[in-house]
Length: 334
Image (cartoon, rainbow, N blue to C red; front, side):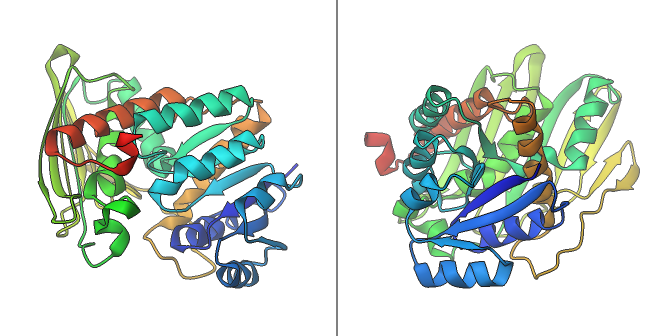
């Protein structure tokens, strides 16, 4: 039986997610409704993607009995309040990263999901790419010995985009793109909490982080270095250094389609889209969508590969990074 999706927002990421869903079998995934506060945009989105139902309020979509799971693709500050609407209405939720603005909000979303016995997952799509699955398999086999250092960077010139620089829109490098570097490190180190986190950054006049370098120390002397910036393009690669070899993820490390293990490269292409995409390799969002379907079929309320505790640890580390660099959002005062 097909999982019936409701799409929350008619923005760029929701467009790409909907395109990605259409690369999966229609007997497994169907998009049945879209909601956006701008009803005109919602209507246009529905027409473009062949979606039968259009809503202009989140509460309306939350009441629709024909929706199994809601994809929340609105901007960061609204993940928590809007996520609560759907979870409280007993809707399963796949919410874009970051799951919320801080650890307190993440805990509230998780608690609400548990209280209503529904599924909740942070849409860290990278984790479900075939490349990422292969990395986990290789690490499980100790293919490069013991991992001693992980490096990841993500930089893009985004300062001309309001949501990247305005504090009230959840701007800043860390929450938007640095999260990809941190999640990669935590995936490699199997969700272990670091012993220490040191963050250095540069902030814009708006009060958000333009650039940040984060150094993490884990048990047994293992290290990680993450660099993120919205000021310029970086190589956007990730490297895992082990005692017996190296695993490299070439650009684009957040949506990877190739892997270099001890010098040997293997390609893992994603399907071609039926409509132009806003973000590179976005049909790769199909993998997280299929993970949601598999979890729902098994009656699970969270994914073991991107669990509630994974999201909480990610938020906790980002809270600490922001504390050290001096980035404070209004949500931190509530």
